[in-house]
Length: 181
Ligand code: IMP
Ligand code: MG
Image 1: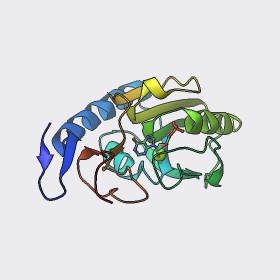
Image 2: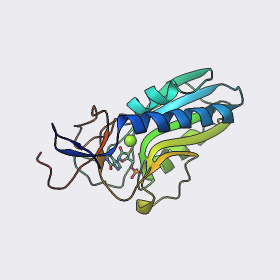
Image 3: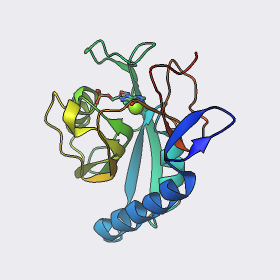
């Protein structure tokens, strides 16, 4: 694994690796759409960079919407409870919807969102997550598209945070327990 000397962080996936995988996901999603329209629903805030890049790899008539759920708290631990902070702006009834998430961990967030969005009767509801930590799953969720499957590591960068910091790192890095705050 490479190191970013300026921040002393270990890089798990470089910006080039991310870009290549995002392009592959976009091509796959484009094929599966069969020329139909798409509503991309980003989960704020972490999925924003991923959605922006993925959207430009998808060749389809696409619109954006965003939802926000209660966050992980300030550290690396979850409270377990998921709450909606920001709802969709537009109805998704009868539409092809793609939930865009940065990282799938326990599955509590996506299980909650999937149930909530299905109540609006979309035509299709698919899930893309850039990262998947299957070993931590509590709720059964099978994402339709996964960028990278990773072990139980805490990651930051490319949208993902530790206490709201590091979202703007261009690479996906490891948050080690001994990293200075
Ligand atoms: P879940 O509800 O446990 O699946 O967690 C989903 C959310 O937790 C993700 O959308 C992230 O915002 C956050 N999260 C989970 N693992 C990490 C991580 O390693 N780094 C940063 N955020 C994480
Ligand atoms: Mg997230």
